[in-house]
Image (cartoon, rainbow, N blue to C red):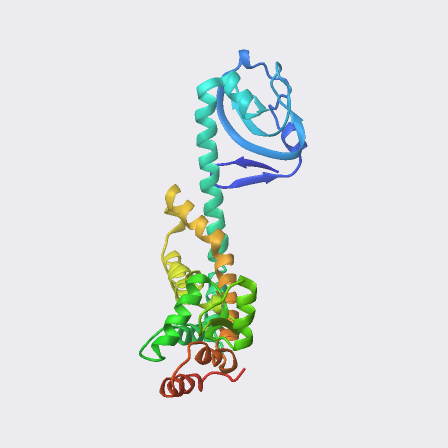
Length: 303
């Protein structure tokens, strides 16, 4: 791929012959007889092309199209440019790369600008669907609120989230047979009572609670608010730094939307009565606490 930098746009050409056939192009330019004027393009190929300097011709994959002060053009790699044209080449190549990056980022933003409504609609669908992102966020927030569910449940969920361990376990008094097994494994007499940890199952969709899956941040802060800001922005006047910032955001957008969709799927797996009811047994709620907790779960799907 070859990209030429014109005043108004990026011009892309696919064939190396499109360059070598340009008026004034020389594949055998003597750098001692010419002074570098400007860089007008850069290229990258899987197959190597020879350097256009008469005292080099080293094959390389990446380089620049340059123009001399007397109007001749040739191609050179970055190393050759520094060697034969020194500081002038380094200054021009850095400026060219910066200008190219700026134009490419501006082009990307303009291309995206015309599909912003499509992305906004995608966000609305994720949020507004039955058992969508808004529903998942509301229900997961409630399960972490001691005003709505027993404190024991909130604390156990917080510990599971921190350890990222979906196992639902409880400690209980060991039976005599289990205590005897412990004694045999340790080779000594143990006092009674002994306790064992019992696994009751796994809590599906625990990742819906993880901080990086916070649906308000993903869909509102990281997407919807940024879409509004971009819609109010004059892309043509953005600085190099602002263009780079928006380009990074755009590069992460698809991953953000996919993470949000995955978080919704995890939330749907989490937020069922069948999945969450065993938490009551794991934390050993008393009858009043159990009643309050199971009543809270009644508005969730059964499975």
